[in-house]
Image 1 (cartoon, helix red, strand yellow):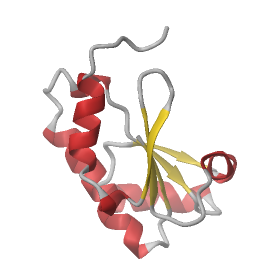
Image 2 (cartoon, rainbow, N blue to C red; image 1 turned 60 degrees about the vertical axis):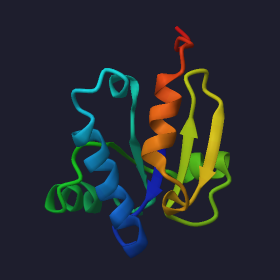
Image 3 (cartoon, rainbow, N blue to C red; image 1 turned 45 degrees about the vertical axis):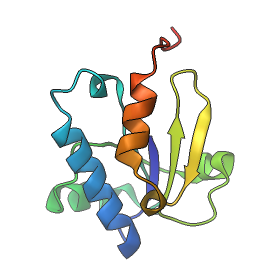
Image 4 (tube, helix red, strand yellow; image 1 turned 180 degrees about the vertical axis):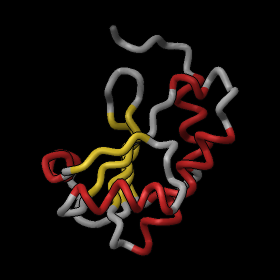
Length: 118
């Protein structure tokens, strides 16, 4: 799952906390061992992101700075915005993270019997 967010975006904070909690909750689940949740920061400065992540305890998801190219590729016009990508690299869902049960969708995708491409 890709989660486009920013430190200055109040509506982005709860979904990022939820991402952290999902990973923590499913840490021992073999199905979730296949899952990657990646936060793509839309902040202008990477110096803002790391302290915010630490201060707010959102350290479980992987975090990357500079989402501009990815925003264009995924058609992101506002944040928060998430994209679920299956094991074959196909985008299977995009939208606001509060509009669906992401935990169930992720579990369903990770449970599918097909193997990830090598």
